[in-house]
Amino acid sequence: MSSSLTLLLWVCLAFHFALAVRARPYTKVSDVRKYGAVGNGKIDCSKAFVKAWEEACAWEGDAIVYIPRETYYAGVTIFIGGQKCKYQAVKFQVEGIVKAPTNLITSDGWIKFQYIKRMTIDGGGTFDGQGALAWKHNDCIKNPH
Image (tube, rainbow, N blue to C red; front, side, top):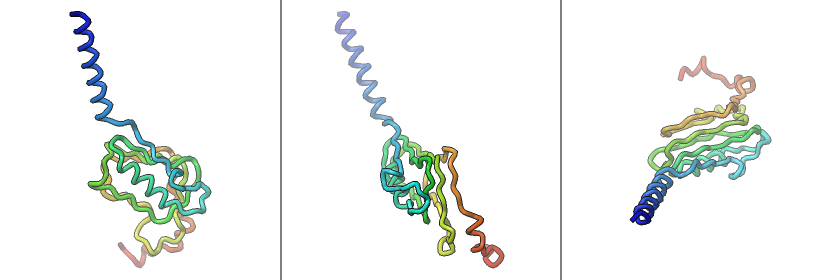
């Protein structure tokens, strides 16, 4: 009788553990370098950033988009969430520097996050809009929008 009870207890514990593991997968880290981002501050890494985001978006647990300690140049980059995303929560772990183009006059933004829920940005890195170089394109006086 005692061995049957012990076996039943082990089966219940194994079943409970299996449910817990299935309910919340481990945190997925999507490193932008995996998708071709080069930290030299010169090559446009926006496509690599979006590919890392798409991998994180499709993950069914917590996800991290990881930007390591290097300097990355990124043109206009749009991260779109919405219904297709399956993650529980997503974090942009920015440890490096992400530099903007100096001429964004043809765009209404640089880095955009659209329809993204449960997102945090962390890591101590920098989004460098290169204001000193881009300021000459400022048309705030002429364009109130």
